[in-house]
Amino acid sequence: MRRRGIDRQRYYRGVPTAPYDLIKEITVALAVMLVVVLALSAFLSSPDEPPVTIQSWAHNAPLDFLQTAGAELQGTTVSSDYGPPYNADPTRADGDLRVGLGAAVQTLGPLAPQAWAGVHQPVNAAQADVIQPLELAAVGRPALAAALRRYQLASRAQRGRWVAAYDAALQHARVHGPLVLVGRGHYGPLNVMLQGLLADARSGALDALLTQSGHFYETNYTKPLLFLGDGAYLAGLAAQQKLAGSQWGMTNETGRYPGQAWLWLYTFWYQIPPFNSASNADLMVVLLMGVLSTLLVLVPFIPGLRDLPRWLGLHRLVWREHYRFLREARPGDRP
Picture 1: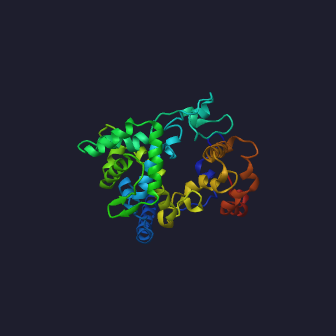
Picture 2: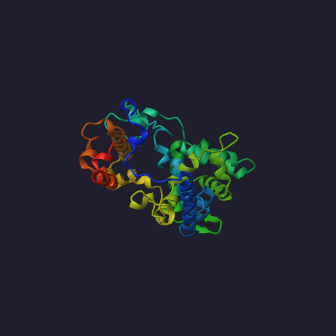
Picture 3: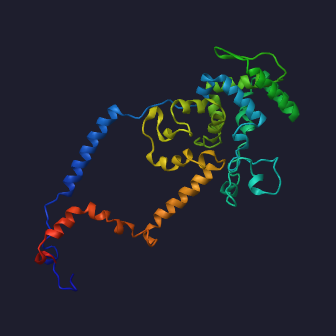
């Protein structure tokens, strides 16, 4: 303005102005927001669901707990062969890194970021969820210690037969108070072992054993979460609360309350082909959202795409009062 010889008064000539107290506006806005939030929280408060723990699982679904613990020993659960970052698949050694690192690794052509990251948080489901907790809990419990020692000294084939027989016996088991009554069978020491594990789970000790890492603060809940995810109990609770991944309401909180709105950008894709039937859906969705997010960031630099707002003229609709003023202003009032 100075180079053109235009002073401030001339520059703003014809522009309507009004006194404006910014501090007052902010104060009033915050006060109104506080009242609205407090009023709505009385009617639409977030549900306070109790946390799902190993202890609550053992109390509410002891049969599922025992079946899952047996499956962990047999290596047939999801976490047993999850792949990186938790474990590898030692039975696959055909030279392909993407296959050799686990049967659950998701790939898309040459892209295999899960395999590239490798196993950096190793979890052996059978050892972490069953054997190691029992080794700690067996101190001062001779019967449990003897059963665990017998199991560890048996061959791999024998362990597999015991687990299969025990799983068959659990199909006819009955829950009687704190006890799970399992019929006779050729399952060796498994009943003593897993009943001991169930007792520790019901007391809350197993929750602590699965999170112990030797640090002062125990904040890594990977092992108990993987153990819970291997059973049917947690998935059943999610289905009851309309939180299953196959449902559009996955972005809800419990009880159909609105959840994180930004999640629908990701969960939307899981409901439509080809994502809803692809085995590598997670990788496909992440890559697609990465591409879309990159395009959004690059909008100001892409010719044609960056000009769409100007061509569509939506700014004139938003600033219609301003453009109306320009049309009605006298030519002499303009700077």
